[in-house]
Length: 78
Image (cartoon, rainbow, N blue to C red):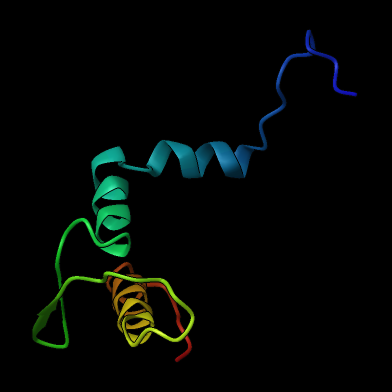
């Protein structure tokens, strides 16, 4: 059982990531991946409506994540 009076311990890397996170950008990405907002992927606009395992938009969501991470300069594998 956790001590409810203990001070939370925050790893410096985690705190650094939190400090670099823009809430509006995070909301934007969540809205795209949840189907609230449309997104342009490979020059076509889509609304990602389902996360069902067999739904074809799963590949589009993967493409969106791949392209987004590349734009951030992160090394990705496809």
